[in-house]
Image (cartoon, rainbow, N blue to C red; front, side, top):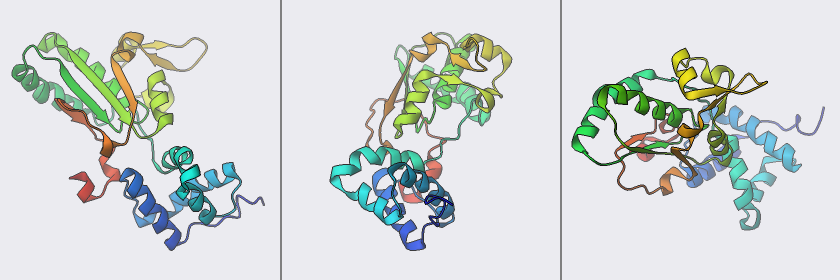
Length: 233
């Protein structure tokens, strides 16, 4: 049995220390039942850094000399990045039928600005972009900008690449797959069309430090579950 596998789960006191730190840095609220999940994910960082205890790791990410670089890995370890295309399609239907017509009517001649906050690996902003283009068939042409942001460097870089396979695209209608993706040679994967990827700006940022004036519509479906009621407000 190796040193890594012998590290037990966090104690309740250790869990609370990390939970407070996560909330202070990213406003993510970890409930007590997440203790095993957090333990498993932090063990990976302990192994990568060859640390033998959670307390040693906590001191490491609390030290100003080492905290900044490791904090990126820490936050990536504690956030779940489960996402896929055509998730909760009722939201996009509401956008096309109710929200977009009003936005276009009330902002004639203006470029509509959309933000996918907590965009994870990019499925939400790309899905949104495809729906915007599709809606022009019935609503007429309009100009739009779209920002996708997330606190994780890793998932933002994944989003910029726009390459998806397996479960992430299994719900994409065949007509949409042909229209907005291209099949990669010698790979069981698809990449979002270049012109659509270039329409979206991806950015690494903390949601609670973001400032984006003049927005017309914000999608944050996948991120609110991380926050407590006060932060949600």
